[in-house]
Image 1 (spheres, rainbow, N blue to C red):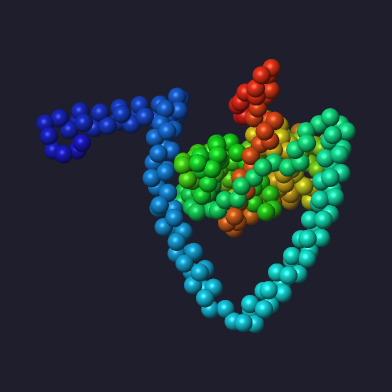
Image 2: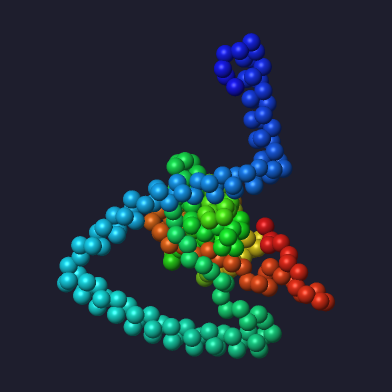
Length: 288
């Protein structure tokens, strides 16, 4: 476009006009989402190659392990297995009791949300955008809006999918918000990202609210975006400016946003995605 010619100014104007049209089409009409998804699918090998040195290092390190280390690891795994088996027995009893209560209350028999395990294969290089890339995409049934967890709590939500990968916006991103409630008393509020992976803001909490340092914040389920009851953050500090009607509350994310490699992609219960008319169940859109 910028090769020397008789009308270089016209060519520059044409490039600017096309760029503006693409920006408007994407922002207002979401016309380039399919193109972006196709490009993300094409870039999937780049994510795999970027992750390959770490995987090779882990594999190579595993070749040189002493017999004593292997025996100690085996003993540790056996001990953990016993603990997990005991917990499984306890959870099985609780699940049976919970299902019985649900039947008595004429409620849903679904005990837990369905999940699949994914792996983090990429991280956004933009310091102002807290995003990761996981190795699960539309071919695995993943859709934008689904919640992403690690072993400790809510990490964020899917914002874009390709065939084999998905982009996830973390709860620490400054554009992210999660409706939460305090486990201790059910107080509801909104948790906002700050751009700091270790700090979140709990906003619009009146100075008369019963909230304390150490309170656990879980997803409230309001808005239908995130399932209810998943740990999100813990209240770290509470401060109040004189004359202000709201308190300033800082919270620490429960999820290990910068460390977790394995994640869970949460699928909403079938009852949330389908209604049952007179004949067959017809799919309905997830609440945004």
